[in-house]
Length: 132
Image 1: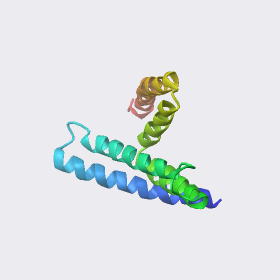
Image 2: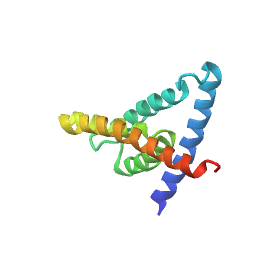
Image 3: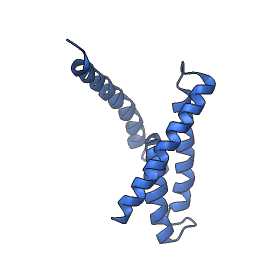
Image 4: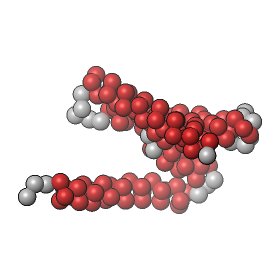
């Protein structure tokens, strides 16, 4: 049960961080291009890469610290900050394992299926949300 608490606290902190940084970047550079979202995705991917490297069994963390780092920092903070970081880290792991087909499939399927899903969700939301 403690694991869920760490993930929840980290997720809340990550979400607030995403909201703050996206707002800061958007206020500075405008909203014509989603610079805030891009910044969040890149910094989140960078952060999860650092934590992931430190948290592997061969890394510098003992087992208890590794569990905490994984729950609180990776799933919690990085997951709340951006799920793109999780996608990026998992794809990196597949590449490191020389699973080229799975890595490429993950990238292609994630982009295509998520774009289709957001489009279908938008259509459904528009259907129910429009005044008739």
